[in-house]
Length: 332
Image 1 (cartoon, rainbow, N blue to C red):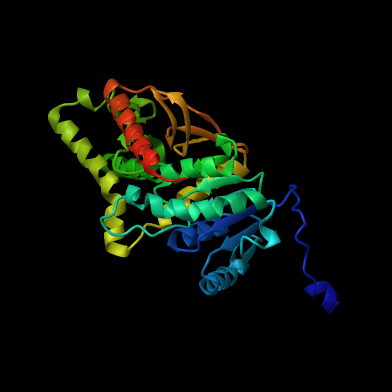
Image 2: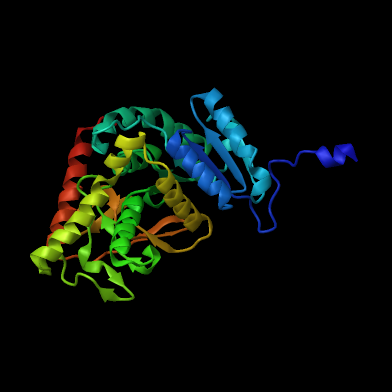
């Protein structure tokens, strides 16, 4: 009886719905652990493996998570390394590892430091998990998504960045707060770079199909435009404000990454503003940035060709130009 009760199930066991859902998070810093905790409490994976260069800290994080397992749906949480076989056959590998963004430092200033890390990291992941979907969260996320695609040799649909998912959430939250609405009832998008050149699509902001800014911001009165522009400035500065106060953003991006992962694993065909390779929309190509994208079991299934006003299109093209200039300078 003792042996029966305390036998350990094999790694190949399956759930009643089929193959066990297996995910790997590389990077056990604040963002990585926020992702792990969010996924743990939302029953996202059956097997969650955490990888970090600081093994001692990693073991402590996994112990802390594991002690909460009696309060959630069954899940296996383990610490590992890229060399260990138990990361093989992962459905999704989430990368949050990278150099830390310092106060007042732009995301793009991080680029070459993180590129060097990814040169070592991406080939190891693909060797162990050739059929995985890569989800990049490390900043600057659009450039690192492009770099990961180039280094991995995977189809572009299998390499996704968290993009402006968080910026879009901030945009909806702040607009909804102003309008005294539930943010889930408001549709609005931030596109382009996850960073200083990001673009608010004012012409598509709507509640129940009612456009708030039909024709874009340029068709508003000066007073209205100033109010709306102030909201967008809050969106754009939010990360810098949080980093200045607590050192890093973590909780909201953890929740956002969980939504991307659930959309993939559950084949939801959900539209999210992730960063992915743009197939020639609005004169933009060969760059990863954010447009509304259909996410399902295949990854980034298709990018939606969002109609924009002339002003929005110009801003979107400028955002692409900023990223292309950075990509041209990095050494792959």
